Image (cartoon, one colour):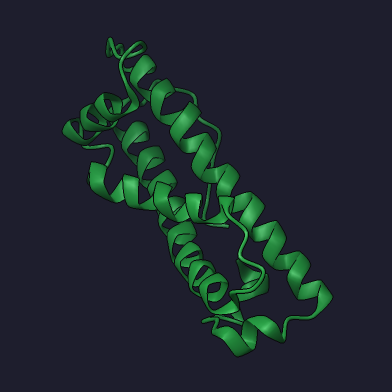
Length: 141
């Protein structure tokens, strides 16, 4: 995110003018953003319910998200689904549409910051609510 900060916000012209090194930074950001969203959704959030001894292991993801919202770990299920949609935009390649690619990248930069903030909020809530839980220290990167 730091590598792309000076280039943002992106537009069609800025996207087309990216150097090879900047393209590598964009590709690395997309990969890391997608992985962060995947890990939070597929591993961390279900593990959180498991730790809280919530009987949701066989339930659909939407039920898990709703329960996490009820427990105050997620602000809203709809917003989580929006973050997932932003991630899904990168599963399709649009080589002939730099305007769309620039717009998707701008959305992902904002969503990545939100995912990082969500991770910090989850951490803070767990530290307060479960002081005996051993958590590795995290900080804003």
